[in-house]
Image (tube, rainbow over all chains, first blue to last red; front, top):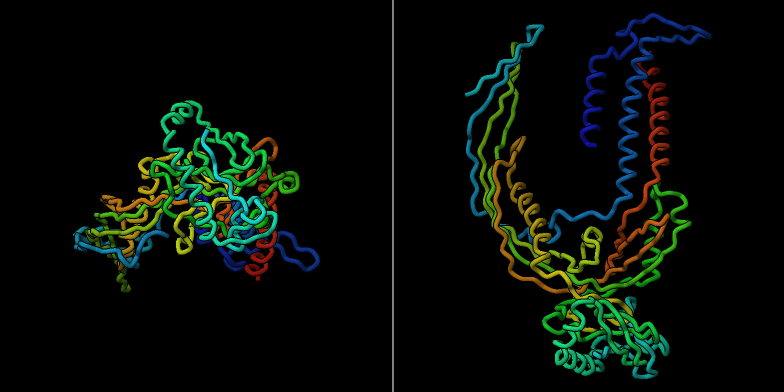
Length: 119
Length: 359
C-alpha cells in the first residue's frame, strides 16, 4: 500500500511539473463565456486532473489511517522498551573510505548529458 | 482427591478477594479488610499443607490426569468437586462461588517468582471496552449496540521475563553526497564508505506469555507493564481472579524473545552509524546470551464478545488499563468515506486551483 501511495505521489509531481500552471502559460482561449464568467477549457481540465489526483491521495491516506485504528492486536517485533540504553557498549568501530562516483550534468546544452565517472 | 484452599474471612467465614482499588484483601460479606501480609500469615500453613499433600500424591495424580488434561479438586468450603483445566492455579467453586487457589500447582518449581497485582477492576474493564469502540469510524454501527460481552475474566497470565545481552557484529555501505555547481556544469559527488560496528546490547525483562491458550498478538500488544510495581509472589493476590500455570516452557518461548532482541539490537547498532546520507546493511550477525529467566504472573482482563457468530477477543492490561483487540470493519463505510473525500476534495481543490491559476 505504501508503494501505491508513493507511485501516485510521483505521478502527481511529474504531472504538475510538466503542466502550464497559469492561464498565461495555458492556451488562453475562452470556450464558454456567459454572464461575465470566462471559462478556459484547457486550464480547467488540467486543474481537474491535479485536484482529482491530490484528492485520491488524501482519501487513500485517510481511509488507511481509519482502517489501521481497527487493528490493535499486533505481534511485537522489537524489544526497545527493555533495552538498557545506558549499558550499550560499542566494542569496535571503523569507517573506511572506499571510492566515489561523480555525475556531471552540462548546464548550457539543451539536452543535458550525464557523464558518470568512477574513481 | 487433592484439596484446594479457600480464602475465607476469619471474622464471618465469607469469601475474600484481592481488591485492585485498595490493594488489600477484602471480605465480600462483612467488608473486613486485610493486608496481603496478614492474609499470608493466616493462610500460609493451609497452602503449605495442601502443597505437601499434593507432592505426596503427585505420581498417582499425574497418571490419572495426563491423558485427559482435566483435573478435579475438592472444595475445602463445601466439599464439592471442582473440575478444571490442568494448568488452573486459581478459580472459583461453581457451587459455593468461593474464590479458590490450588496450591498443588506451585509444586515442582512452578511457583512464580513475582506478580504484578491488578490495579483495575471489572467495571473499569467494561468502561475501557466502551471507550475502545468510540471514535472508530469504520466500526459497524450495530456492533456496539448488538454485541454483548459474553465473558469477562480477570486472569493472572504466566509470563517468562528474559534477561540477557547480545553480541552484535554489523557491516554497512554508507554514502555521503554533495553537489558542486558552476555556470558550466553541475557535479554530484557520491562518496562510498565501508563501515563496521561491533557491540554489546543488554536487555532486561522481555516479557513472553507462557500460555498456549492466550493469543500471542493480544499479549504482545498490552505491553508494557510497569515493573516498578512488581512484588514477590504470594497466593494472597489470587483470590477473586483466575490464574493459569505456564504450559509453554521457557525454552519454547525463547525464540519469540530472541526475534525481538535481534531486531532491536540491529537497530541500536545501526543507529550509531551517523553522518551519512544513506546507510545500507551488508552483513550482520548476532549471538544472544540469556542470563536469567523469571517466571511471573501478569494481570490481564480478558473480554470476549460475539457478533454475527464471530467471536472477538479483547485484552486489557490489568495494571496500566491499555485495551487492545481487533474490531470488525464495515467496508460499506470504508468506500463511502473514500468516495466522499475524493469527490469533496476534487470539487474544492478544482475551485481553489482554477481561481488561483486563472487569475
